[in-house]
Image 1 (cartoon, rainbow, N blue to C red):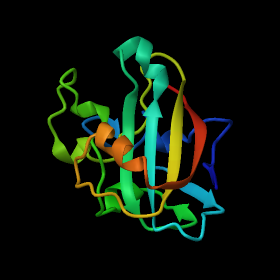
Image 2 (tube, rainbow, N blue to C red; image 1 turned 45 degrees about the horizontal axis):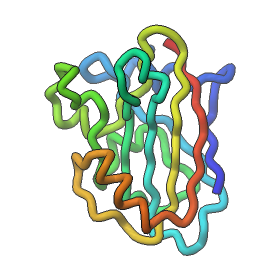
Image 3 (cartoon, one colour; image 1 turned 90 degrees about the vertical axis):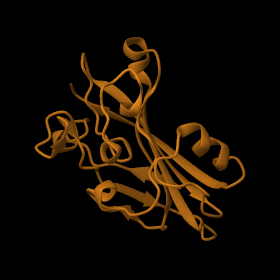
Image 4 (cartoon, one colour; image 1 turned 60 degrees about the horizontal axis):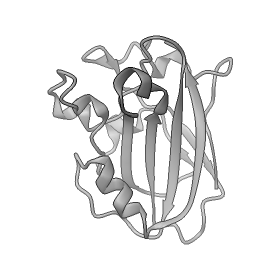
Length: 164
């Protein structure tokens, strides 16, 4: 399985990042499209994670920007998928007690890259699963990881750069 994200000059287009026009609580909320090739035939659903490990020196933890699961297998996750998807999406790091974001809608959807200091490298991973995950909207990353353990048929990761 392979994934691809269309970049502009090597970076995620600004419409999906801190310079986006579509924002909530001053954060970008329109998810970017993801092309997926060679999905195994036995795939029942997909799961997605977008994590900023470059945030660790600033926040003390990897910043979770997006978690989604039980996505129907498809060759492309379309633009703005997160805001339109009715399946389970997990808590992003804005729900942390270290931030004052108290908005369940925002914390359970795509929260686009918004690096405060310099360009960051984001790890996008798409998982092909042999069965849906038993998770409800608002799940946490640890529950996501635990359920991946016996469900992953294939996975593909991609490093995506975003400017500040």
